[in-house]
Length: 155
Length: 320
Image (cartoon, rainbow over all chains, first blue to last red; front, side):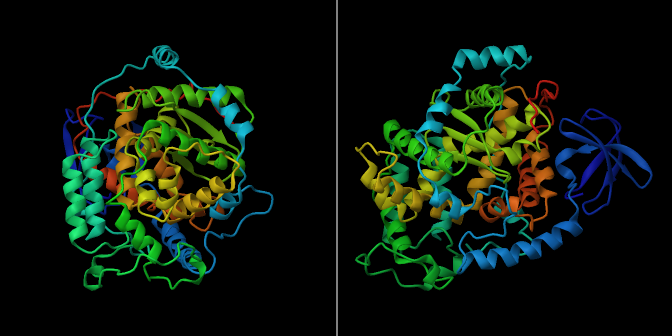
């Protein structure tokens, strides 16, 4: 859990609260439904907000973090943008991008797929999608931020 | 100090993203000019004691490789200064002009995947999501490019590209909508134009104004080199977090499950940072876990009453 949340009997704030799940608790994720995930914690099953649970493997991330630091050091100094690449796989890093030649033909091809407002609207209708109003989300307060475990990026 | 000012500028842009700077923005620039102009990309609060740069005559040619790591570059200082004086090229035609040049260059690095149905599909989803934004009638174009890297690109003027490597990791139309919504967020907030203002590409940007830029010209190639160099340094982290919040909201407005984007962040957060396919993404963005945590923070209980949207997994166009 990356924040405190309440365990509920169903995927809705209208559902009964069955327990409190504190930040840092290890939980097992069983399913997701929209903004909710079904979890199992200390033998109890229920629902919490999807954004309250980090499902990535922290152990793997920590290892990755160190490696990212090493790569980052290299790219910030002499090897700008250079990364280890797998043979035969087309990468897309700074060097590749800077070396690229303008491709007018592909740009024209891209133009052929352009979708009009009407086409987009009927595509939405076919999928049963209806537009709804929702305000943009404000930025969370600076003080609440957690910084990255390996510090601020240096670039 | 200047970094926080940049954030203020971004926040201001939320209220007036149209062509002309508001008087408040101009006042902000005046205020900044009365203080020290520092470069914006890697400014830290500790830069306060440094003297203001006294020279603007240093040639713009620079070799980043030769520079000490933490020294602000004169060209950046100059860019930081000018960005608060000169108006960026903000007419629609100029933005479009830059967009076509950059998009053509990106397509030179990685062409479109040869799958008409796929390309048409991402344009349908993308245009529908973009219609929920403040710039619904930009000439939006979406493409899946042939690269195994896991990344997506937003280019001024409304060009959005997703790599095949990222597209393949998506599981539903709602996830695609969230990813495209993030990139649309960069375009509608003009994050890259602002980035260029703050880097040495500004001088080039000035030269673009009122000119048609031929894609293959030496001038355009030079411009592109500077653009990608600035891009490789990454946008301000707050621009990325803002685009994440916009991505969720635009997907939700379009009727999709709002949680497609955080689901994708979880998915790419599982890719090891040592995997070369995410090297450029991780270099230019905060870690997916941090982006997820920031969304968690921003959303809180705000979307509790939002009716669940559709994920349209069945309609999602899958590739191999």
